[in-house]
Structures are given as C-alpha cells and as structure tokens.
Amino acid sequence: MPKYMLIMRATDETVTAYQAMDFEKIMNDMGAFNEEMIKAGVLVAGEGLEDAADSVVVDYSTETPVVTDGPYGETKELFNGFWILEVASKEEAVEWAKRAPLAGPGSKAEIRKVTELDQFPQDNEHIQKERAWRESTGQL
Image (cartoon, rainbow, N blue to C red):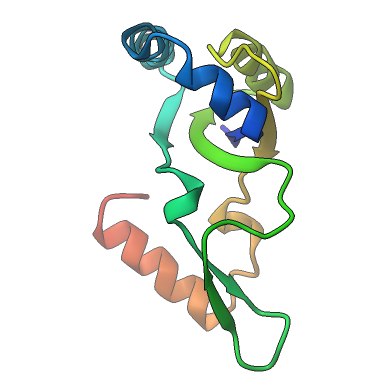
C-alpha cells in the first residue's frame, strides 16, 4: 500500500494565531486525531518540529555548502511537522488531511507520495545496501 506524507505548513500569521490558543486544546485535538489514525491503521509516523528560529539551513547553491542559522530568509511558509500515512490512494490521504486539526489563518497541509524503495533501480549497489539494512532492522 502506498505511503503519503502530510506536511504541516504554517505562516507567521499561523504561529501568532496558535500562540493565542489554549495549548491544552491543541494537544488534545492533535492527540485525538492521531489516535483516530492509529485506530484506523493508517498512521506510520508523525512528528512536530521545534521553532524554525532554532533551525539551521545548509544551502548547496555554491560549491562549498553554506550554513546559516534560522529559516530561509524570505520564507513565507514553514514546514511545521508531518504525518506519514499508509493508505490506498492519494484521495484517502486527502480525506485524512481534511480532518486534521490545523484550522487557522495560513495553516495548510501538503500531501506528497513517498517514493518506495522498490521504485528505484534494484541493481544499484546502494539500493541493495539500503534494502539489506532495512531488512536487518525490521523495516522490510
């Protein structure tokens, strides 16, 4: 069954709006949503991310990568967290995303299909090593 990543995206306006909300309510709403996905058997993984102000960006635009503190300088939206769902179709992933407790100005969820290991050339040495590692760790 395919996997889809639901990417939580936020703007500065979203962050400001969430700071005014009851944190306990946010946690309860998110926990209930996660529990619903667990009971449905579709949740593979999910994590929130720390404040983007504490991030580090590695920019590969030059021959030697440049490391800077904080988010991209002109970012209008930030990656705020994610869920990985194992569902039958993109449409099912969309239905789950529509139920996510992400209401508010600037709040969005981007849905992207996860490329599976089997979709890469299987005769590639590095794909074979990754497959062996995944098998040895119980991921396959």
